[in-house]
Image (cartoon, rainbow over all chains, first blue to last red; front, side, top):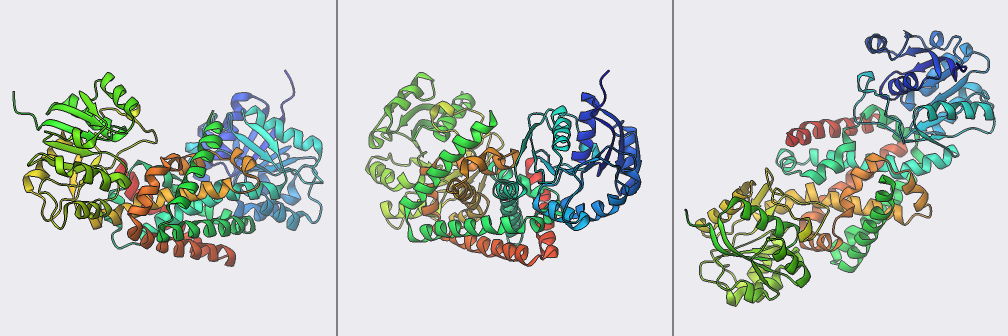
Length: 294
Length: 294
């Protein structure tokens, strides 16, 4: 039998993502022991009962002891304090990655903790997968199959470490790509973070209207699909909005300008403009998004 | 056997909605002959072949001859010219309704055609049902089952006519409600028209970025759901945006203000504000929209 990819994997934050990663690696093989860590001991006990992790600690410093692989599966706002807590306890040559939805902020946090050079084993990552459900009970081994995982290695990241993190994710059935943290944050500000803000903002606007109960009564299928992402975890999106501030403001300003132009066209009765915008949008969506669905 | 609800029904615009109505009435019984009308003769021939309509005319004036029921199933922008064309040819006591997504504009068009008093048989309506597909081939008899249909009778509408239109829609499995045209337009500006504009506007913004191909590559499930309504028919939404101008501008202005406040909070790093908005939105959606899904 071949050597496992990771002999002892510490997963800090055993929720939907961390739990699904553990499950997928169990199914695929390639990992020895899995040590879970989190603040909610009940979730960790449940994770042991479900066979997702072998044992747990509520102390990140203890959890990473002797681990040759560390995955930080918490919301991005917790990243710096966790890196700070585990820093003195990391094994030499340990591979460290995360699953945060923003990458520039994670790299900045790591530099504050480790100084100008992060450990060569540190390779930030972002699996593009999830559901609106949270917690280890919602986790499942197939979550990452055919999903993208973006790795954003640093200049000081060891090529072998990047290859090891890639190999770990490929074991789960994911398709792994690499890009710079800045490019990652710009792309996801546009395709993920801004849509979430728009969905939250729309539902919030309607919820603050006097006739809100009446209005929601008539919400049909299109509204349900459009606002599904507004049922996401508010704390997670709070963290992301603050962590990806610069890229988000850039694309929000662009969007606000375009939306206001649409508003002006409606006021002016400029049907040609509206038809042009709607047609371009429909063509782009039908072309790019439906293609991506295949 | 009891008398049919409608002996001869003229459906002007035999697309997704008109075709599905014809199919549903066929299945449920309650309609004698169905005469289709439209500009695309190929679609009408296909509708006859599929058994959806009995015969057709491409001339609305001819199609409504001798009909005791008339349904106008075209986009709202075509309403006035169709009412104008059929006006001299309507049978005495004919019931006339439509399926337009805005109601104030339809009532205004009817007043321009009929003068200050519309015919007592005229009862505007709006079935809250649809898919992103168009055309008679996409129609199906179950489209309206458990869907709402809003009727907006005028002061001069005959109570018997309103009851007849209600009975027709109830035959299709729909749940029928009545409200004023103005109230209808305010509710749907908020829950339907604004979301469509936001989806179109977002996809348009992204489609005009330099990195558009790269950006759409990383669009995941959340983005697909969020932008699904941007694949809707641009001409139909052009018509709706112009027809529901006043109610739309009102809710757009409110939304733009709220969105900008969120933008300012992101710039200022005001996490408390963001968490409050995201939490209120999630609670509202989970409470109102999930309840409506049952």
